[in-house]
Image 1 (tube, rainbow, N blue to C red):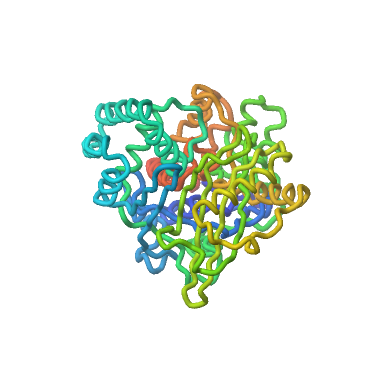
Image 2 (image 1 turned 90 degrees about the vertical axis):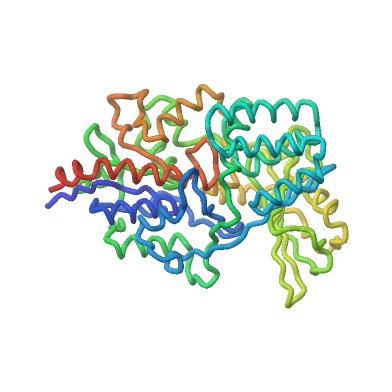
Length: 460
């Protein structure tokens, strides 16, 4: 029986990042096999919340990644360019942004006139992205938020909605990261083309297949050694890329049984909170006109100890004069006693924003059993934007980050087979946003570009 050896195996097809990387690697001549998420007991993702991909990815552009993946025209990529407006509504302030500096400065002048000139100067300085400028601007912002509670509430909302941090970093580091992120964002984003007749990840999987990636269809049993990753008795791969939560859970349960708890924690995260999406349908006249499609709400309404911020997505249908709202509330992952009360607090937050929504538009809150099933489905679908892991201390989390990202190849386990594992999906990054994961995808392609000649020679 002949043996097959791949250069790279992609563990999971539920996230676009790993599939774009797969197509980019195949186009460079590497042999790639994709293990479907269904083989890892992971359900397909849902499109309840629209996927927004940033046009600007750090200092580079998403177009670069799309081109390297074989999409030479945007209209062939399953994506369309779009503007993006977001809104933050707090107890005392309401700010709307569209990615332009003009809107940013005008909103600051209206809501924080006493700090606006200082913040605009800091913003211009931070655009240079030098560590010195970022550090100085972050220190000034930290000083302002200590003196102004309203400004502090806005900054908290910005950090949560923009970065989705999952580590206990000090505020100075978070502000530096936010400034570096926010000053590089433009007015354009990419959305999934509404004309696309299949899920976006299925479309990308077909694209990978056309370029020559293999889709795994046999019995799957992963084993790891110092020299390779075994996918079956007759098939191995040199490297493994995690592309979704299912891959990490599979490794933790089936491959790392005898590993340390710390190593397993990197893959099978302990979850702290999950987001329940409350769906409300009502007449369009009940929705205030200034309400944007995406809105971050925080009126301080929550069950004791739980987050008070809510994420609101509004769909308007002018022809039918109808509207659908999805409001996301964070619930404790383990303690279900507070779930119903926290959901009700979310509804009260929405009514403060849109008081004319009739009571009949709110369906009964699901039972504890139904909510438990929804939580399990959220986990099985690996929805990174609806799950928050237990927060690690900064020093400990940086060790985990160094092991999985930045292409550090598990420096704390130098003679371990795990040095062959990489990750590109948001689940394993310190900031669970698409900018971070797409930036990691570009880094990974750069890394394999440097190794390509050596890999090709070894394969032949």
